[in-house]
Image (cartoon, rainbow over all chains, first blue to last red; front, top):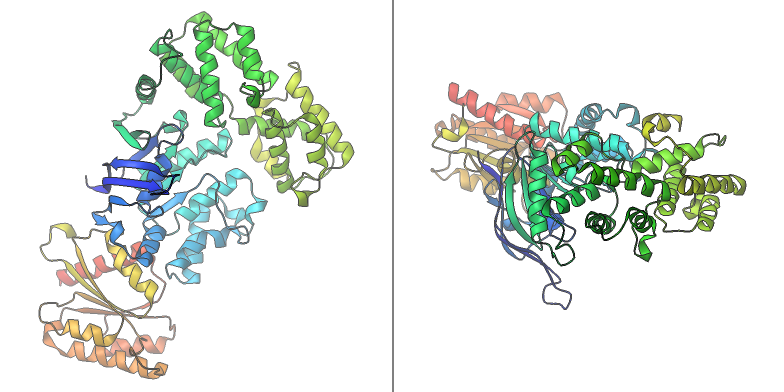
Amino acid sequence: MSQIIKTENLNLWYDKGKATEVHALKNINIGIEKGDYVSFFGPSGCGKTTILYAVSGIDRFQEGKVLINDVDISGLTNQELAVFRQTGIGIVFQQFNLVPSLNVLKNISLPMLFVGISSEKAEIEARKLIERLDLTKYANRYPHELSGGQQQRVGIARALANDPPIIIADEPLGNLDSANAKMVLNFLKELNEKDGRTIIMVTHEAWSLRDVKTIFHMKDGVVLDVEKTNAGSVGNSISKHLNEQLSSMSSENNKNVSDEEKISARILANFLLRGYSMDEIRRFESFVNERFENKIDKKEFRRLINKPFKEGGVGLWKKKAERVTIYLESILDEKKNVEHIYKTLEKNPELSIMDEIHAIRNWLLDGYTGQITPNQAMALDQVISDRVRDFIPSSKVVELLDLSKNKDGVGLSFRAAQVMSEKLELILNDSEVNYNSSHVDNENFEKKL
Amino acid sequence: MDLRIKKEKIKIILIDDDEIMRALFRNVFWIHGDKDVYDVKIFVSLEDAKKQIDKESFIPDIIFLDIMIPLLQSGDCMEEEIKRSKCFIEKLKSEYKYKNTKIIVYSDQKEKSIKEEVSKLGADGYIIKGNLMPKEIVNFVNKIYESNNKN
């Protein structure tokens, strides 16, 4: 099979020659086969996003070559490069990046108009994509009237606008709840298997690698190795690459912990803290390792993961901290191995932070008789997210809920803001309160809006 | 037909003063096809294209011609531009060595009359500008080439 993307001694610096210079990609020599589904995987700052934007012709590199179908893209004029970016690749972004002033139909048509397609033809093609992504009833809506999941579907349709052979997905699941994240993964798989497109995904979440066929492990701007995964062996494969990653980590603090336990800690951190930042995940992982080593007891572990992030903890709210602690203790009691942990979590992962926030939001709004617009719901989600992570105190919650919509608040009445804030504190501090997080029905909630 | 196994490249000429169309034609054949299968030459004016076409060695398989292209330094009216393109088609079609060259005229003119006129002069196809998606351009060329070679 021929290579659709190839790099030769690719080097990219940011701020080259300045005091702030960063050598982001170092002598990258890789090949991606036509029709492959690959992922660049590695810790934050490893260069995985930079390599995406270098092969897309978005970030200009200083040395080496990027060949697409054997054509060196550094030889293209700006106009040719612009056409390549519109027709050769489609990019799905974490933040969706839709044009707020254009409706769904126009957002999807836009890339076609850029390459000279007539507006009549663009509309016909955009409607086909709208149907494929199940967006028919939202065709005339504007991005702010859509949920995150719907916006990401529009983002995928727009990426497909000019029917590109390569799809690039930059942390495409980062802002989605579980149901929508699964939908996006299924769709990427379909684009690969059914359409035969080459898919490149950048992710820091191990679980989203489930359909990937080739993994490029990256660290400090270097591709450490290339791994071909077999269907059904992602569990082994992830264990393997986590092992490799861990072997290169400083073992100063973990010298008494076995590799098996280190891998378990990393898998647990990735699955239990879905949607959290890498810093939060890494800190959680270090506490799990300490618990495995018996340096801390169950009670101390729970206290540390509940403590606010800025005070050296992870910032999980009380109820979540308890749930996670019970789960970890069950692993310790039953001496579960890596394979077992991975398989259980893969089948039934902990709800992502987005799911939890939606469940809490639904619970808070239960009994609320006023009308909430999608924009208000999004503002409410942000307040909940900041509070459950302990970024803001409870007094700030009332203020933000009450603050006018125009000032990025939620725009509730003062009384409603007070009631909701009290309910929220109940969830965070009282383990008896159940907001029914296992029955998130976000689509139905959206319909109610 | 597997186009990659043929020895000679498919020779394509585009004549258009529209910068986007020229950039699209320069890119679309290696993005959706194979750079070793297509030989694409792009011209901004009829004069430039004539110079190339007059060279014996380059006999195009397909010419895409925008019906309205101004002279490089002139402010002709629409009728003059169309007239010049028609002359170009007529001249090419009258020469034996271009007997297998297909001429596809395109324009944003939707009037049937133009389509009929260029067809009478011997043009092999007429398409409305902006009505082919990038990948459809490649498929369109392949189809013309294959049917041309069958005959």
